[in-house]
Amino acid sequence: MKLPQSVSVLTLAIASATVATQAQAQENNGNVTAISEWNYDTLYEEGGMTAASLMDTEVFGSGNEEIGSVENILLNDQNEIVAIIAQVGGFWDIGDTHVLVPWEEVDVNVDGVSIPVTEDNAEQYGVFQEDYVTKEDLSYISQVDDDATTGSRIWKLTDLLDDYASIGEGNGYGYVDNVLFSEEGKVQGVVIEADSAYGGDTYAYPFDGFDAGWDPSYSTYVLPYDEADLDNLSTFDYDEYDGLWD
View 1 (spheres, helix red, strand yellow):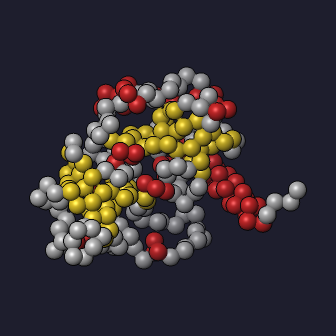
View 2: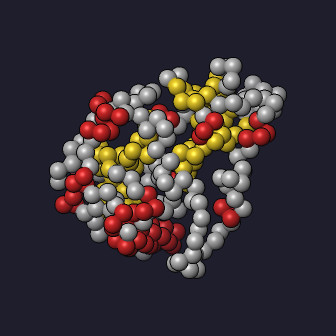
View 3: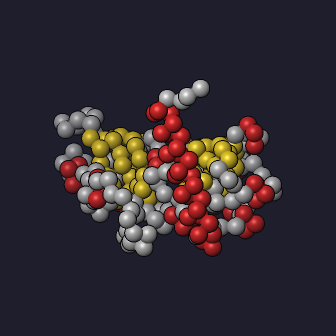
């Protein structure tokens, strides 16, 4: 049976992205955290924030009033949060609006996050701040030189969440179910919900990001390991992880 052209194109695009990621991961293998050096004890002891709880958490203004919720997170190429995007102000005269707040201006607390945005200064926190979103980011630019310097790379948390996950020679492994952060905003690991063929359990892995050949434009997150690396990895237990809002 001949597949529809749209399906064929999508399949080829995913396969191409997977192959490209695997090739780059192999080139950068020295930058990948070895599974033999990885365990959950540090994660459980340190605790932090899950992406699932951070996204959509309540946002409070300077007067401790609830003004909105987190919509997305921006990170840099060191896998650190640099800013949040929040929807705020439904009750303000300006109506609902999205703001981009640098992470150093965000106060993380047990109730949610607090930001210094008010009805009067909301326009100063426009989403398209050039420190984070440049004109180049808004244009389609193909890479023509493998040695080209790209500068600071900013990516959105939604570029990773819910992506397919593969392992080894392009084998479907599961999907990206969650991301773990320290309270300071550093990625601690990526949580994969394995496919039923791999037991259907949840596992946390190191996230080396760009160093492991990953790119936020890919629709598949390729784990830079092979199946043999997974034999001794235990199921990740959220009950053991001291999440700030969990």
